[in-house]
Structure formats: structure tokens, C-alpha cells
Length: 152
View: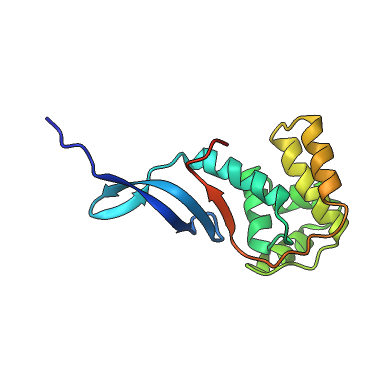
């Protein structure tokens, strides 16, 4: 008979595995080789993070843009062509890391709408996001916060 692994729920856990910090709330954890590890579906988490980035109240960071590009399996050139910029421009955005890159708000808005398009969002979601993005994001930058225990 195999022993059942030890589990618990952590109220707040900062996950850095996506290239930038994401604060997860109500995270089921499992003990693996003596270390507590999130017991989550990482594909589902990536989708929720993408949706959160589309709606993020602060400007996107270079690391977040890189995550978006890689999530949709796009090269620098393909991503740049999609937004009518050169691949060196995309590389420059990504190299900023955890800070906001120097891209114009209409391009960032298009990136956010692109996320919804690629995830197959309904037209109402596009309209809601477009209305919310009329003004440039102005909130203070900080990590995304996602409640893992809540329904997507």
C-alpha cells in the first residue's frame, strides 16, 4: 500500500516560473522530496495569466510580453510582424525585463486584444476589454494576483 502524499493549501504563494512574479492565492500544495510544491495545472494557470495580462490595470512589462509571445509559440519576427514592428523592436521590449518597455499604448492595446483573440474569447469580452482600455493603463506596476482556488 502506497502512502498518500502530504497536502495542504497555502493562502499566498509567489510563483516565478513564468519569467515574472505571479502571486497565487489558495494554492493546493503537495510535498515532493521534502519540499512543498504547487499542485496545479500549469497549462490552466498559463491561460489564466494570459487573461489577467490582457486586463492588467498597469502597463505590461518586457517579461510579460516575452511570456505572451512564447505562450503563442511565436518567433520574434512573427510577433513583430503581427504588430507591425521589427523583430529587434520586440527584442528591445523583452530585454527591459520587469520594467515597462517603450512601446506606444495603441500597440500594447493591440497585444492585449490579440490575447483574447488567440484564446477564442467571445465578442462581448472584446468589447468589454476595448472599453476598459480606452485610456492607457495607469495603475502602479506589481505582480499579477490570481486565486487558484476560484473558478476560471
